Image (cartoon, rainbow, N blue to C red; front, side):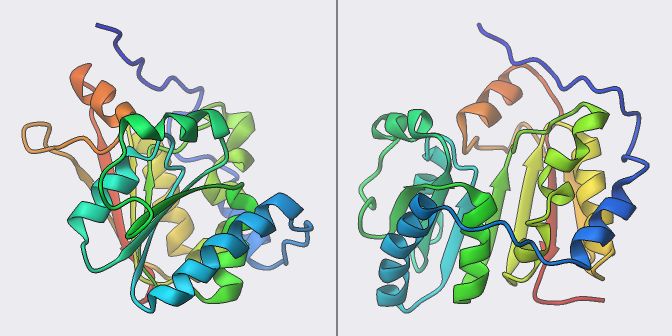
Length: 225
């Protein structure tokens, strides 16, 4: 069996500069121009969201889109949008495709640095946002590459609704909890029970099979402290 490696980092806890980095992004506007291909991808799916006229579930960093298809089955009253920047990963979705594709769920190729800003500007009715096993960028020098350390983080906070994050690196969740608290959002972190866990992604399946601890953070972005 090809076992997944646990995360190794030169950090022993949340990054010492995290608060400063997050506050800087919260207090400034992200002015990077939207790339044309991301705008087009958003425009194409935005038309479907507007036609849906119901709750939307966003599955960010969806990879091969297995989680997107699973979420569409778990939430039959919502339109599920999976987004990933890798065409290579999305091309593999046919192996995970389910009957709701093209009706109640879609997978979209786009960079979230642009896509999240467009979602916020369009005021999508995001009921639940899933971010499952994002790249942890575990080196301390790469803290600004983590989503909560990036300039697009404030836009994610404006979606409202429920937010669910999963990772096999507990430090990542502790950092996200700290970043959320800086905007007066309360979050809860829990260790997932491997006996009850039904994997939603290939990574989650590999991590579970290799005996790694898997963590989940939950937050209500529609309710601040």
